Image (cartoon, rainbow, N blue to C red):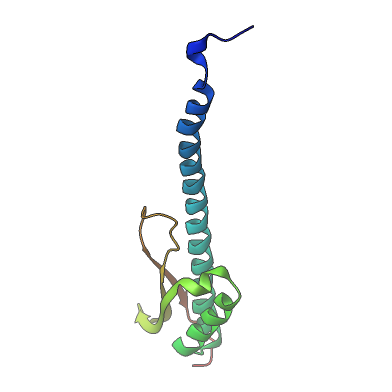
Length: 129
């Protein structure tokens, strides 16, 4: 069946309209996936650093070293701006608090540019200070 003359080239125009929208949608999905991966990696490193410091009684310096070691081989290492750790007393217990500040590797200008994750762990009663 032959197409009428007025429909000629309409597929090209439809393609030119739809493809940029599909590419934008694909980039948005990749961006969300990347942001979630970085957040999960940083959260895991913060929890691990706090846990190691609390269990061993090594203090904030040990927590920072453990976080740097945990992030050293990951993609998230390049986005970390600062790592802070401190030991505080709460309700008579020593708690190691860790905070990691990082910038998100954004494809576009959408979403937050700074990500802050925290980890907490209570010191074990038998841990050596």
